[in-house]
Length: 176
Length: 249
Ligand code: SF4
Ligand code: SF4
Image (cartoon, rainbow over all chains, first blue to last red; front, side, top):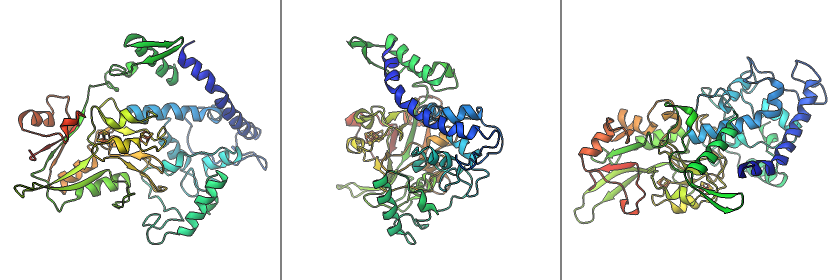
């Protein structure tokens, strides 16, 4: 067993915990068959047009691993022809969303499931939750001049940041 | 084979073939330098040292009122364009005056994409890295915001993002808590385009920026740097910048 193998073994419990959470969400969803919704108990997941790069069940359990692999190639080597990039996920999963994004409102693709599984995702603090080509709307707390410019709701922003800091949760309520 | 395994195998391969030092049983210090290419990517894929992107700035063509490169950068990377001490600035215009002769120069300053990059040396997490084609940038997934690289960079090229960022360019993810700097628009380069500043300078500016592959002897930039006198800023530091300036000797 190599050094890296050992490191991988040490890390495994963390990964397993994460997978277990996702599995919980996946099982609830699977009870309802092909409609990606689980009635009153589980998250209601928006269906995306077209076919996913992997089977849905596999994705429920493994999408984070896929994205981890992909991001390393994308960022560090500049390999940008992978179909399973976050950019492509967003393109498809935001297509039919009411606000055209995968993150922001409660019903959005990424949020619905992660909220249910109590997983905090930070992807969209940096990544755009909307696909390329569309004009992104401004965050409701910000004016068109940025967080400190004209029209910005500084009080609301401070409140949201304080709330996120004390609860460790994303300020999802703020997007209403 | 999964990508993780591929990566592992490469690391182990490099460890065995290049240099491995056994520190304690099972613990290796691995030198993974040049040569750790992606073997399976073939000819077209990333190969260490095959390409070295560089830029040549002709200060004679750069005029002091022009900021086309800066605005193009702000627009492409969705930077605020503010110049507060806490704003991200990937490229700045500088005015220099020779005290003895009074001759003044105007030139853009950005990350110099050093071959021996101090920002990469000091980064404790491996976030600051040099890509196979010489582009230095930050892997924001790994950056902890310690700002060592801001201190280490002799060119003040790095910025720290102090405020939450919204409305990012989908091609340029960036956010609060990370260090960042010019990355030669690597998202454009990977799609066969030139950096936004070079494009803007060529179309609406003075045409002072020349971008190309320094490792390709046939490229325009290689031929220019081989025939005219150019200067690397603070060459005495041995950082070997890929950005060169002509006309300020
Ligand atoms: S100019 Fe600064 S940020 Fe750019 S590679 Fe050199 S040390 Fe790093
Ligand atoms: S701020 Fe980020 S990129 Fe810079 S040295 Fe620290 S971890 Fe590395």
